[in-house]
Length: 455
Ligand code: ADP
Image 1 (cartoon, helix red, strand yellow):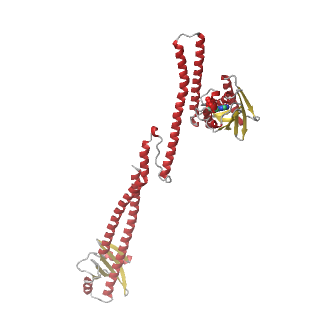
Image 2 (tube, rainbow, N blue to C red):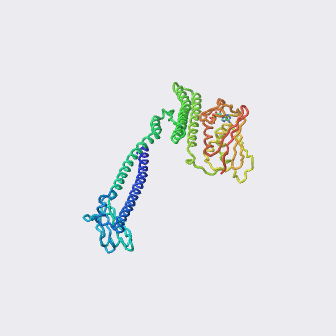
Image 3 (cartoon, rainbow, N blue to C red):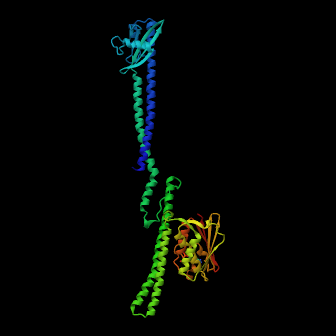
């Protein structure tokens, strides 16, 4: 069921319930008021007649005659006066007796002093009336034609008012909910048009202040992020294919040239070494991409354990030196290690090793002396690692971009690479809730500062 219909139904039902309660209260308070008022009138009329009978000694036949023609008499009026011995002293109409008083009735009137009851549609009252030391029992009955007619009209008016009010409420509900939810329907239409190829479409933000406006703004911001990451993915894929294509094209070209004619063993050796170089590039690239994918998982999917940073650093250094024996890496502790607690952190050993190896390797490969110095220090609960070199440095305008995947600085001609290392390193450090910053001066050197929280 649509929200619009649901809201209208709910609103109308609630209003109907309230209106019904309100109408019932009005009706029953009117009905009770009328009944009480009529009992009072009956009593008054009966007392007047009894007084005429007992006080003014008017003959019953005369009394009957007076009231028969009186404008003040009530419809189907029937007053009877008894003494306590159930002897009838007066009755309005001798021939019609609808109340049909019995001895039991007279006794219960004497016991209760006053009773109210109905005889068919006649409203009746019975009460005791003391007069000159004697007790009389009076019954009076009549039909409240006017009152009942008014009550009937009230019933009809309330029912008609109820139906009309509910219909109006339902129409108003449909109108207002339709109006209020129209932006949502428009949103649904617009969102239906958004697809991977139309990620630039945005939905209307209305006044931007109510809940629907806020929803639209949030949705549009989400689309901004999606579009951005979609574009980044596209760029990433095209970068990867470009990076893969170059060494692959070189390998194919070299193999094709060698296949044209018979070569000497020396030429074959040269060619094999060239192909090996390109294959190594490909292998390095695929490893980097694999690591990047691993570091892109969310934290919950990566195993974290307590480890010592100095051990991870030593492992990283060993890895770098193994593939580049000409490099030099110095690890310096700026403070005494006391029980090793300031270098203990919670992290993923493999990923941290990849990150540190990248920073060490960059330091060495972008320095003429191929030297990198790693210093370890701490501040409160943070361990500080500084990877510095006295290399060629990074241009000011490159500093902001070097963490972007596949970005290589102006100095890229100086050393080979794919531009993945730093973005991967940054991802790994962030995954460990750490921070990585860089400072560099051209021709003087570069320093990367990594801050990691201790375990
Ligand atoms: P790669 O080293 O494969 O080019 P990285 O992502 O590791 O890719 O580095 C991105 C860029 O940052 C490098 O191309 C280089 O321009 C710059 N860079 C990183 N580290 C250093 C450094 N220690 N000295 C000078 N430039 C650096």
